[in-house]
Length: 363
Image 1 (spheres, rainbow, N blue to C red):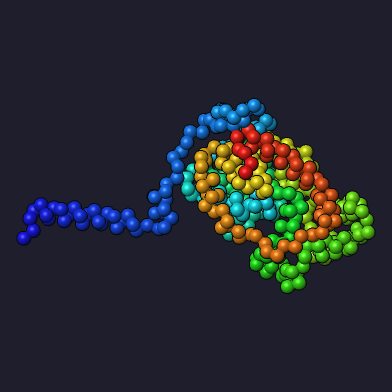
Image 2 (cartoon, helix red, strand yellow):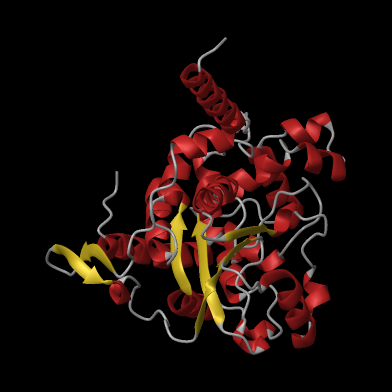
């Protein structure tokens, strides 16, 4: 016969073991989260930043650059307008993981939905744009919406502007990346019916074909670039080769703009200055992640943790066998994308000033 005290001890042991086993019935991610939970929410009323002479604790109202419109903003909606071929796949993964870590934002990736983003022709009117915003962008809970939308004006729809963010890249490097990405993506290879020759064709060869078919060969660098801008897009030659010579003006003015006269470098700069909480640089992705983490009101350390966890792993869109064009071709490309470089320099200057204000040093 087991004594009453021993029976009681045995019962306690069984109950304790049952509870332990029940707790172990969880996924790897769930168990890891319970072992290494997200950092508690920090107060975001202040930040350590640069005041022009030294690094001091400053009120959060100083976190944005001069010209940024803080009033009448929908701070519960962050819209990452996702300029293509600028490291957006990596930043997308970081954002998604950060949202999962902290649970402070709902993550809405428009690119992962079965329904593709609307074509420009499908959102020609304010009414159609408003319907799209109501059904796809505006949410009740704090949300980060990600998609190749470009700047999307909410004011013309009668709503408050969200907090816009994006990231840009050296225009020539973006062009080269665009070219080789289409030749390494199985989806694009299939849809565009690339042959083995198309896949393996170097950028340099396509550039020379483009010059010859437009009648822009045999000139100096400046004349060649001007000729290529003037002749526009020539559909002959290589598939998915050419890019818009003023892409950033188009992107930050808004590809869905109902007023095409608003697409200009001046308007793009104005939108960046007034409505973008931060625009990062692909060349400084680490600092971009840290800065976005500071300017977005609900994050504390989630983006940095996600970036460190994913670093070196998320290489989905990296193209292999990139052959760089010749120095002469690069010189023509830079001249051809002169408008883009003007905006790129504008964004770069703001980027470094913003890092300085946030107290983030380049590594």
